[in-house]
Image (cartoon, rainbow, N blue to C red; front, side, top):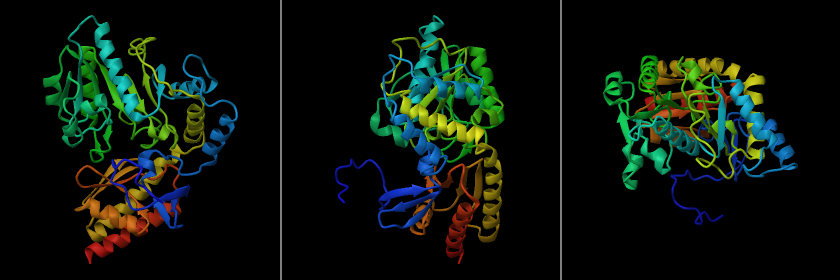
Length: 389
């Protein structure tokens, strides 16, 4: 099977997957892998979940796409479900996390304009952050390795040191229209924002009348043990960006705004051809039903505790793990050579990915079974035995 027709933009593993069931993936040769990547925090219900299959099957028999010139039953239903579970008032649907970030940035810029101040257009972002690869999202991503080949990026943005309150205050003034932050930096290395820092960001936004944007694309939709990550931190943002797990593998994104921000974007300001299409929103409804009403989210903290306790035992026994990070089922383990460790896991049938400089990311499906967790832990222990021998 020739792979030469695809652009070479990814460092792909030498495997071609054909199917998946639950927390397992199978390649074209029938080899089984335990999936602790979940499509990078996307497959919250694992692979081939009946609720997702049914939603796609039934909705595709009715209507798939009609454009945003008209209302459809499914985008109304999904928007209502989201709003019922947060402290916000309106939803805009798009197709990805990056698109959600772009929309949130536009809302912040428009908010500044509506205040009657032409200079109120500065957006603050954090060091070590990641918000996407389009030009706007890339401009507020605090990692030069992603930015360096695409200069110049958009102007009117300033970097703030993550978790540094004094640096935040130094960069805040009346010209700031918005701040974008990940409650837990995923790509940056599973680094959690301190509650003190998030509270200060909220206070500064209130003081200078700016919008606070939480990027929950990786850490939201149940991964921390609550549908929205902000509820774990006690700070309510003005805008939330979500995607990934919202579709459980089907492309969909959204940004959700509160009353402060809901009047920023009006007809003509923003749009999406495929955003809110009935098929994607039907899947989103099925996902929320399983996460919230099906009890999946309720089980996350228990599974997190189990995994962390087992990982701590491995850390104490072998010394290969230097640190265990994360909340819920967004877990990171610090090792000396994460790329080599990741490749060894792959060779033994466990899929994991790296984050930051020295972190292995564990992102199992939220409904992962105990037997799959144990199987993954057994592979990890075998690798650690070899490394410590």
